[in-house]
Image (cartoon, rainbow over all chains, first blue to last red; front, side):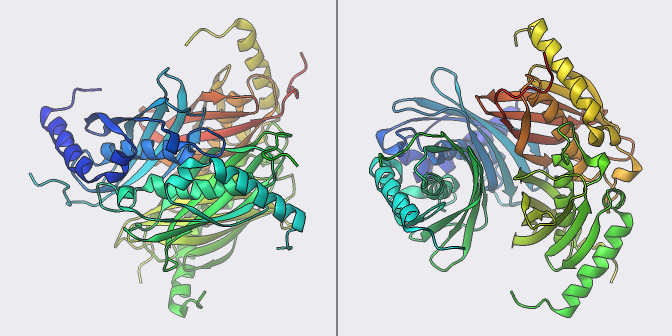
Length: 147
Length: 147
Length: 147
Length: 147
């Protein structure tokens, strides 16, 4: 992969700052943005007591929420407002109380208005917890941050 | 659709009680279980401030979490431990602060160990917010509640 | 559902004729277009010897191809060139040699450029063989047939 | 990735031979099995005139059929009968008449009865045409070939 141009990297970071300021959901779930770049993002989340379901494992919807947040930072990184049109998530192994989950999202494809992104969720031992594939829709010419 | 036999209905309700007691995630998100029955469930959730993302709309992952909870109650309703193997969710319209979202989950198909479920998420005006399709895996002979 | 306006119905039929003339794949697989209308289509296909796989049942890809054809006629019915961005297909029961499979595709949602369609594939006994969900992308202002 | 043990490789090849003998669909579409191994397979298909749709590009269902065939050889490679429970396919670029498409399928995850596989379809220039994700279901203790 070629090194992203400094401008593209700086733009991704400015978008991250603007999005993060408004993203009460991701903050409320204790997520952290570890990395962003053009078309990519890495976020983490620790499984809390209030994330467990009736089988005493992390609610699959919340694992998906982590992946979806990584997807949001990745697909908005070019400073054009982009929303999730949809996604799929396959759950491979359970998340347990106290596990630190990390979602790494990368871009598979990007056309004019649509993009396809993969996210892999792993735990602190590097075990694969879930794979996520998201489809984005971009509103052309609508920036997130003023330049 | 034939009326479910009272026993099957009672079983679904007993499983709901047991699952709900442990489901800290769904409770923490303020969900309510409106209905359960054999292979089906209806849950609601009001969009709170802490569910909004950087675009100021309900985080798509949390809409999915609502649908996934409905799916969990539906696919476990026969009192055999069932987990989500995966799901897809297509987001059709945004959820706004204060919206009351309702996820109605029904069974499309059920074999020995695998099942397929659809959930529709609507808002208080009956507008479609999301469609969700979940794939369950059942651990045969492993009950949730002792009979 | 309101009755489609005659113009919309006629347009769907004109698009069907134009698409069908070029659709060597669907014709080669022996498909028939049973119905079209605004946002919907019904196609059938008989399972032939050359559609069987190594398990001696209809190749799942070809069941998907039938559903995808129904999706194509449905999403192009408004006379704006639309392509499949992607789809998912869940296989519920096998198709056997000689089975007559019917795919009924309906529109779940349609925005400016993107649409969501469901197709149900059944056999001649009305048994559900597969469920398909397709995502379309429309090239605005690009008609299939001149009016 | 560790080198597969010779026995596992030989088994995958024996299963390939048995499946290929019965797979009239893949043969009829002119596919070729380029490689198989434990949990993986590579197949190719040349886009023929009778694979084109009404937009004059390769029918998306047939691109999916190629990927699904690669998936079938990959998930059956351990000599336990496995079927596709479902899959999703995202179409990234069109296949044109004469293009040689190659589907490379690898295993993401394998549990007792369920598996998850990714396939990437590229053309003769290495351009990505489609990404496919398949979910398999295995009938335990049911071999494809007698040992």
